Length: 181
Image: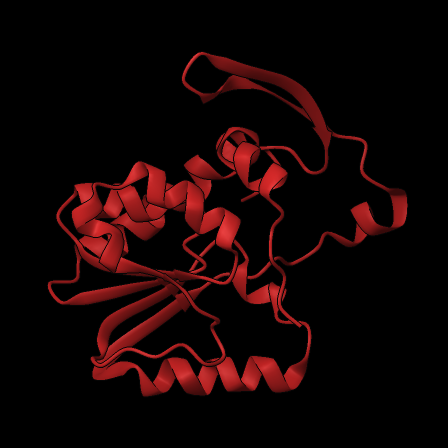
């Protein structure tokens, strides 16, 4: 089973997760991407926060995501010449006619694979798409047992522009920016 984000979630994704994840993940992944001279694949490219940053830094990056609504947001951000770099594909059976020097699955993307058989299929597919010296980098969420026992009482406020001239203010309850190492 793979998860597809609904359109109303995709629309606000960048705004909500900007405070939570940008400082944690982006610097690490951009550093790793900048070390690669060959092709890179971002699995779970979503709305393209990392993808567009890498592309703007000159990376030869491609992106896949299973969620049409997330890819739709990414399409709007890209020049039409770069649309061919992204596609709606699943991690377990994506296909390219070439291999990659680096494949990344940031932002806990791998945890959307709930079935063990899908996880193994994804890993095998990734392996098949890596060059011999290629690397696969992904992250997963390691829950804090105290949060699971005691519940989450941290709220993160978000406020910003999600479309030109349109703003959204809100609060989401979950571990805030200081929770993520």
